[in-house]
Amino acid sequence: MTLQQLAYFLALADVRSFTRAAERMGVAQPTLSRQLRALEEDLGAPLVNRAQGALTLTPAGEAVLPLARRMLADADSARAAVAEVVGLRRGRVRVGATPSLCIGVLADVLRVFHDRYPDLHIELSESGSQPLVSGLERGALDVAVLVVPQQGLDVSLEVTPLLRERLSVASPRSEPAPSSRGTLTVTELSRRPLVMFRRGYDLREVTLRAYADAGVEPRFAVEGGEMDAVLRLVETGTGVAVVPDLVFAGRPRLRRTALTPPLYRTVALARRVDIAPTPAVQAFRDTLLEFVAETERIGGSDTDVQVLHRPGPS
Image (cartoon, rainbow, N blue to C red; front, side):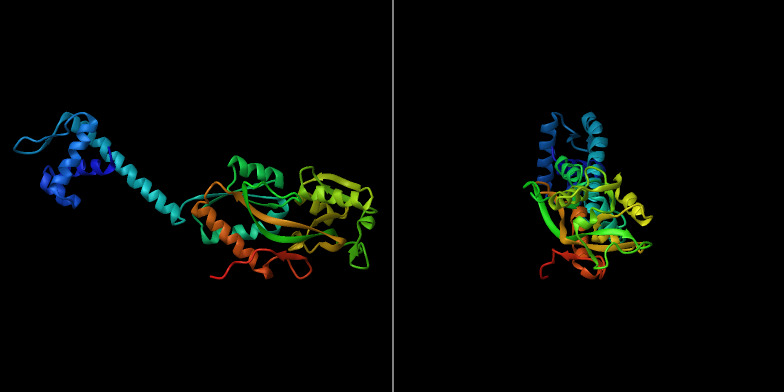
């Protein structure tokens, strides 16, 4: 049984003439008759009475008629739905990102994306890089903006590097600068109370590794916060924190002091290699890459953020 055969049957049921039905469908009458016979053989019963006179439907034809109409209507709905998805009038993008990237980059990207494609639905998951990778592997996320670990990511993921971002010390502007030189060593940092992220944050692991490499121990003022809480605690003078440069944008109450030797991290866009991106996912990827390529919109003059992705020539 094919949709084309059902369409021939519906035309015949509507006009009750093989000749007129063939004209409506734009085929030769023998073609329509042959396809109708094949449909009847597949169903195991005649659908029309072929005796001379007015053409009528058999009981089997009467039973099939409403089902055929519904099947063809569903097929039309499927075509329309796909056309809407391809035309970006419908669709969903499941985006994952680390908390610092939600603050620093993704909020602006999502605004631009929503302005361009207001009919597309965005689902945002905020978590650490390792849980985001697990979400991609399970198929719970379409794309993720995350921090690339030193050992790299799984080969099953397509990874597009976006930014190389410096980590700096955040302190409150309401207090004197932690260093008159404008830079701070980890040893000097260890003498100050530290506001530390919860376990599972990439920033926590990087900071503790830097302390260990310098042979010093951290002095925790508060331990276990999320990004927003950590930044707020720093603003109120509870302590200092090691944070990505991008979070300083739009936070005039925070002072940035560069660490020396410098600490950097690589931010990338990841997705599964074995799943072709939908038009909506591809549109999000294009929007993100276009935004990142505009360097003047990433961070500010007092931050150290290097754009790693550049669009190729058109």
